[in-house]
Image 1 (cartoon, rainbow, N blue to C red):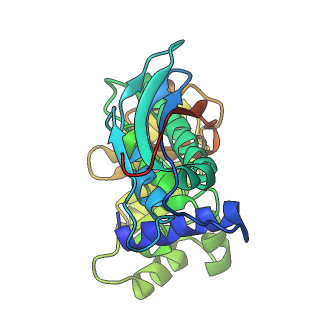
Image 2: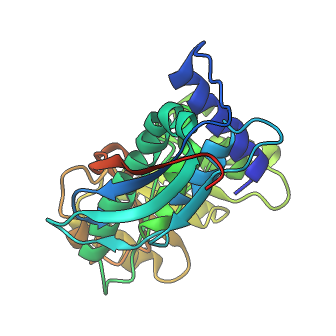
Length: 285
């Protein structure tokens, strides 16, 4: 991840929560605080804890110390309190930074947990699960990171990462072939092109044209997906999308290489965590 970008985003998270609060950090008490997971899941986001809290440290002051007890992606035991990290910092830093830190870690751990569950459902099929660009505004880089920690894969981060010819493009451009023409005119040399189709007839049109090898099969039934896989063989990369509430394993067993799910991120709930002060120490200890 781009650390400069991450720093700017963490600053934004802090400013959102602090508002115009005076964050005066002096030579006051040091505290030891523990971040504790209260339920099972997958731990994610701990790597952002130290850089976030250090943003509150004045120049010339001692940095925050964080002892990580679990690496990213560690499964958390259900029905058990699990300490994931121990913080030693000025009391005011902990006081002012706790909410932003917990918000981020809980949110990302929830996504990683949700993704890990979905990945387990398709185990052994060979299909990979992809996220989408349906993310929380301003959180995309972090949410897509959590998808990777949970065992999923990232689709496009933004529109620069590739060209996806969608239904609206086909309508605007006047058909599948004109839409493909426009994409090839506008694409950079190494840019991949993928096209969305909804019917087997549209698939045949794309195959007949022959220029696009990545095809998104949208809102197709498992039977249609199996026919598409049989028709394309190993010559095309096939991605199922719009599967909605269908059994994701049933979709994976059709033979598609990828399944994109907006629910990897949108369907996740934050993992329950808390921070507790376990020790107050005089400055300099």
